[in-house]
Length: 92
Image 1 (cartoon, helix red, strand yellow):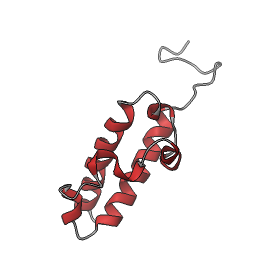
Image 2 (spheres, one colour):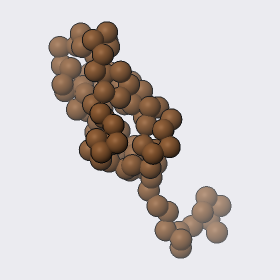
Image 3 (cartoon, helix red, strand yellow):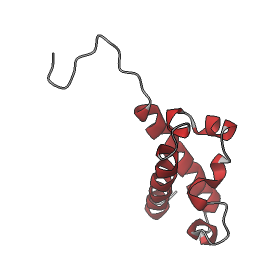
């Protein structure tokens, strides 16, 4: 995957994350695969619609897969539990 494709995957992952974070149920899920229990996750950010910009890309599937990987990583961070004994930002 080249740099341009990575940039496109990042753009798509941001759009997918916005859809996820705008839904109270979806934003509690920490794995892209688990989103399928609640919605058609592959259609988030309008990807399933024929007009979507991604459909004109020669590496469409690679870009989509990388975007999903980026979403997985972001969801893991967003929903990560901070241990009760960890230090806070001030070092206390």
